[in-house]
Length: 116
Figure (spheres, rainbow, N blue to C red):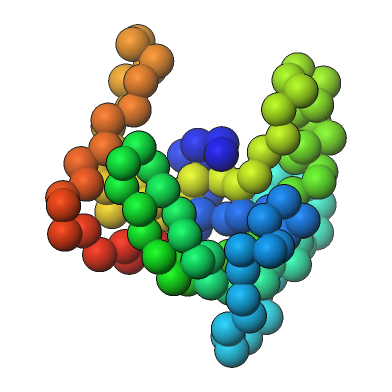
């Protein structure tokens, strides 16, 4: 996962985790990014998502083709990007990004209900 402080929503790659998603009945959504034009985004449900020892189930998320991002990152890393952690997740976990220490602190209560 890539932390994207400029993304308002968390997004997962359709190709990377398509087996973990099931369709939901939302309208098709178009989003824009740095490049020209718009990008197709598809709402779906992620059966499980975890950070550290916290696990969420049946989380409504957005899916899109992130192959263009993986093509860019392939030039500097062999790792594949499965998704973007966006502002919705960062805000709801009261994330604190410390650029000096290169760390992220999340506040996730034991009975946290995801709002992303």
